[in-house]
Image (cartoon, rainbow over all chains, first blue to last red):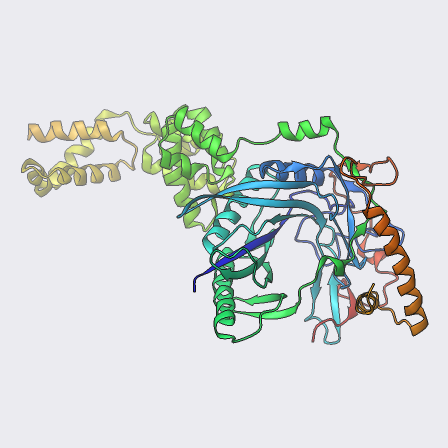
Length: 479
Length: 93
């Protein structure tokens, strides 16, 4: 029998705000234990939450990016949660009127395009961190992360393979980073994913037994976990190796296995009820329109503009628009150097090469595009040679305030217009490279390139290669 | 409400009810269910969902971080702390 996999995802994304969702404590990582806490977020009696406006801004923005309907009156609810990482013994989240509902995300895989429906996006607070290895008989609690704002993006069970899950997560990351609402770095824990999965006979309209794997934080691990779970479910159905039950499972990526954690909770177990401490958030027309006006150009719109208006090829446009940080750098560089093709070439070859060698992701790019534009202008004008241009670019990664022209002047990288010096070097090299000269005369073009390279080395790259080439040919013809 | 549901609620709320309390609660919930049946029978198709009993909305604050309380001050009343952490009975084996 053939089977099909049914997958729904719950994706938690930490919002890029300065302060927490219900109090003004810092929302950033990196402090010592419990240095970013106050009576509100550590659950002292009588403290009342006050909603951070930017969290609602970002919740709305995320909803609009994912084609959702925004609930103009959105409310917070209490979810019972009895564990020491949330000091109130409940999580303040959204159940009855989440900020955004009924969205749609288009993904593309090797099988083509597909729409994934978004059930809802809700805003909520994160839990704290428990540390078990400091003391033998106690658990240590750090509330720094408690009340850090999250959105949870709940998809409908429209995904049917690991490839689709990967495409969906990449698409979410791309859209949310474009909107600048979140870092979405799974490796930093700012994006986490719960995978709900079941298997059923192909063509059946009845869902199989669903299991959930929580807090997955790597796309590769998610793909491995899906493969394992699908095989486990099919084995249970076909061979009766075990009885499938609705439960929450933990994925052990080292052992490549999932383990039962607990029976899956149902909504009733959480006893959601409206939070009497937070009144409804009413989004008026002015607020809604301000957020709508702040939406970025969508990736595919940008890609089409790069092709149609800037004249870039489809491949270059697609590569550039994978990351908003790369797009912004490219556009700033283009504004200065006035050549989209040159700016794209530098971005996709030299800049990407340095990012790769430094094990940085395109989204972590902080290079100033305008300065890059100045460098491209210097190289295009022949003021600085290409190889020296690459060295200057590397220096710009280390020192963001670096001026390419000043750096080139300070380090003797300005192309020489001293034809006397160029001629002298050319003659010396030609005299020493008799065999290469003979090879060139015999029709080997590569021999000229070797001679040119030696001259460039002596001139430290500070020579217009075209001028040098013409001069070399003229000198060889005279010989 | 069934006995099983009541038992589940008892567990979730960490309560221990005696038989008289259980019987009273079951009777109480049976009455509430009858009231809910009356409400559920009403046609609410054209009624806008109410999100709060009062026509009020929350105030929001700007996203400005500050740290007015020190950890030491907050942990003054804590029964047990260690290296800046609050300590609770161990939750994992």
